Length: 181
Image (cartoon, rainbow, N blue to C red):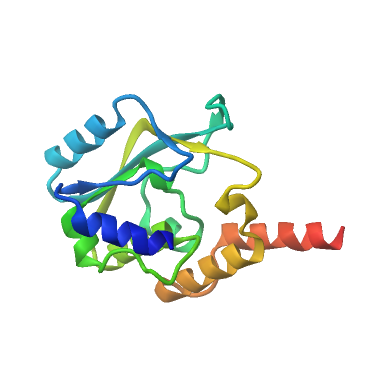
């Protein structure tokens, strides 16, 4: 699956800074340069993420990913995953320190990776710059995950914090309402 492929790819990579794009996402112009320069200028930072935008199937702008916010460990654990995966870059050393991506995960291997980094005491920083575009399609993995995706996120959050965080509760409520309708 995807998690296994990511681990294999990163294992073969020769660089010191990692990031990944899913097949439908794109980097903003200058994103890689900005992330690399930030990490080289801040040796104490293990990972850096920035802003992202939603785009449609044709690459046209839909809207800013408004859930992205300045890094806060407590909010990452108890509120929501505000790090948009294609807008995040991290050091090889951080990836290796936490054992890479959990191959048992299908939907939230990225969120689990961030949580493992924070749990290990590694520093994550926010760079207020447009770094990536997340292509929102009716049939992409995130959009079609429904209960399976939410249960997996719940399982991951339970590894690092008590209970389910706020945003997942709202998504679950929404699914209940859709089913009741």
